[in-house]
Image 1 (tube, rainbow, N blue to C red):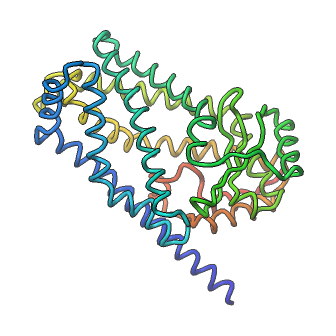
Image 2 (cartoon, rainbow, N blue to C red; image 1 turned 120 degrees about the vertical axis):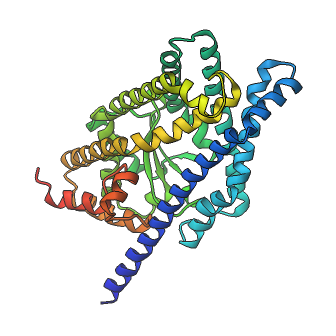
Image 3 (cartoon, rainbow, N blue to C red; image 1 turned 90 degrees about the horizontal axis):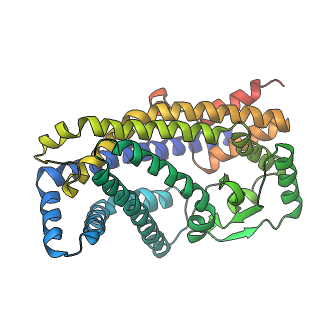
Length: 374
């Protein structure tokens, strides 16, 4: 009886945590759209662009300065929501033990990385727009797609080490087990690594990251130390299945189509949209918030479709993992433990699932495994 009560309490806690996160996500998106709209409707963006053009003699520094000011102001205005969403809420539900100073340091790192990436993409956008007036949307799309591939390759060797400490897997038996699984599934790995996830969060995770020679397995210590070798094997079989089934190539293709579609829509409709705000040209730096509005709105429209496709791919990866490993019971126990440890919404409302879930809900994955027949 006590176990059922405990499970019920945990389920209620997970639902409450998840619904707060859904609400905060919606509030954050609406707040961002409101700030972008006000920045152009009030003339703030136009005045900022004009002031920088006068005060900065070198035109190459105007875009970096504009983006830095816009980004910094948004961070300040969004700080209370960000603090609650990524720090207070996680501590409230006992999912994090990270200290405030460490969280702030991570925020600074994230801000710098985001600014550099944003500046590269933005500088390319305006440079291409200047020299390719009629086909810029194609060239920009190709550049953005190519840049995303570069970032995927650099992620495990540049970005992740800024936030977590890497070390090669010290459990030799588990390392050999994972490498044997990779050989079995014809996956080439640099090696198997573990990272100190527990210094920031109590959630569990595992990943197969990188491209080419940077491809590697990363296990969070919060997963490695609490899950059986069979459970770890089946979760990595799922990750390797994505590679074996060429899901990465499929997602790159889909994301490329989405990027092309977005910039084509901007290309065809920007004159009308800019007229609404009294702006004359997309090449005007003051119009950047309008471009960002396109991104946010288009993401809201295409997000559910991308989530639907992602859920299908994840289900295929689950089935392949079960087929390769035959670890049906460890898969079920793995999902149950992950759901509890991460306070996942295991049985969401269909509308919630439609808008927020890029993986099948935990209960669906468990039910699929129970019904799986080789």
